[in-house]
Length: 137
Ligand SMILES: [Zn+2]
Image (cartoon, rainbow, N blue to C red):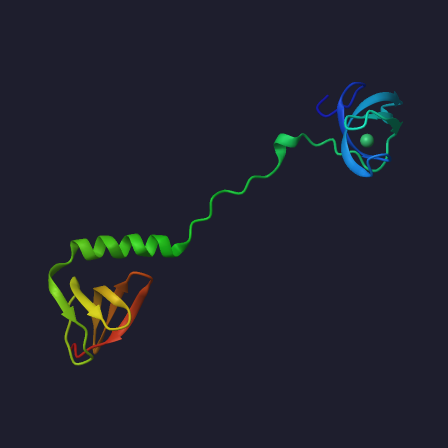
């Protein structure tokens, strides 16, 4: 006894007068199926047309909020910049940088060194992490 339709219930049906699928009220039933409906819009009574949608409206799927990954990266970058010590270092390929250093790149802007490797290091910029060439040994 979950989604049984009975006389007086709301039902979606195609209205021949309005020429639209609209809410109707069940006015006549035969053997458990709807045979006559009344249009809530125009008030006209007609036979049921089309496939009735008996699914409760509240069961419609609702998509959750979508978080863009760049928001998280930006938050990480902001926290890293705030936590970085020392003065801003201008990035140069011939330079040597260590994790925690705050560097300024001519194209990417401010970044914080995350890890240093042989002749390169990973730097977190406001949009994403990039690998830069350095003179690290
Ligand atoms: Zn109608």
